[in-house]
Image (cartoon, rainbow, N blue to C red; front, top):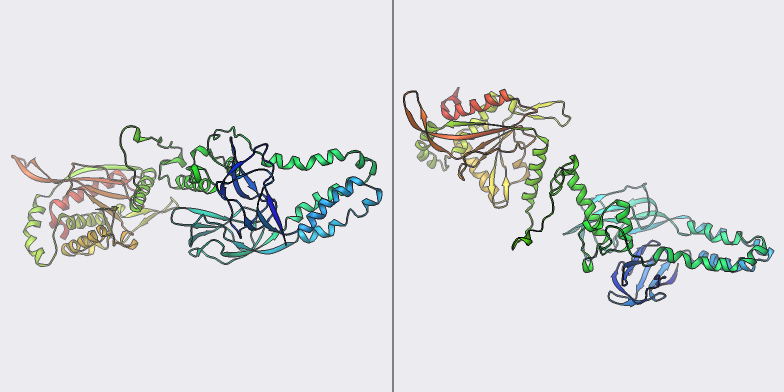
Length: 551
């Protein structure tokens, strides 16, 4: 191990460029060509790469400093310097080129061999940009896997974003000492890998000049050509260039632009979070992950993108007047994603009918005092639950779900019904279990308890799972009808609107009747129109005469 100063390479003629970003910290392990700092000239920005793989000992510049070609910006501790120094010494020997000089040429080969031997090294968490104790959310590799330099090893997530922890070098994973759910910080060791030293690749190149000048006269005639080759390499890789791609006006470094080109990403679509709206690698990774999630769920602006549906256009609403932007709640996001998935996957049909609940309302009001003595409030909800349970037993084709394989139907021998509840945080659907086995008072008490728990945010995941059918009632709000979206994997949902008093013909005259609008949406893959008609007709009949529940 030896110390080596890090100098600014050829800047392609630029001078006094600004340091706009420090990409590493003292103690970080870097690979050759990893970005150390980012500088910006009059026309473009560029990364200053690590000259060799090693450990950063010091960084002597800070953001805002001005530097030029040849300036020292820090120190790095590297391995294999001896072999590299010998390779550099080989060039003068080749130029003098007496015939005996060809004999020592193989001498560097034994020195290069140890440098290329695979050796174990710790895998250390790099700088996390100020985040601390981030969660490990994914392990991308396992012990024994072969990885390339920069390949993702684990994925971590902080309060605002997630990021990949890359492999510091190419090699084989020996072990990982973290698991999903662990918390890690900058500098933590997360495993061990066998990495190939840089000398393994460089040794052949270093020995080549020594072998080439075997004929002494030829070597002596071409010293100028040899001396011109070394400076050409840094000019090719690291000079400042104007980007003429469609993303030319985007503020980003060469490494980010190269990665974007490899991934086929147009940089002007990536939201920048770096200094002065600079696009960083994390921004690019976040954009890719977001696009993958959109493609998988079809739940954001690119709804249905995976099946060819064009995304909604991006509009600047502030041009029309004052606006406010606030983040959606987690429940709102989940509801939106579920509704989009269900609407795109389920072929919906909705049938409508009105239930005459005049007698039911008279009976309910007559039982009000007795219900209060029992400590419950007898609303129309328990009657709707009981009637729906009876209809599911009468028409069992509604009490099913489609199997994921698309070739089987799952018949359910239980009757659990979801009850949509409007809460300050969004729509929630607690599930009332075994509705067919419970009386009206028990259902009234449970429905009230579940609704309060939903509004107070106290429902557990299990409380919202396992429904066979859902009831969504807007009766207390108003409206004459709506088409509810099936909550898959259920195959049916009942929409209930506001009760209305209407004149109905009884055969002799028009009389006022209390009519309840019903809308039944169903999955036409599992339920045909005949079954849906029978279900809704039976449901309306039971609500019209609750005595039928006894039959």
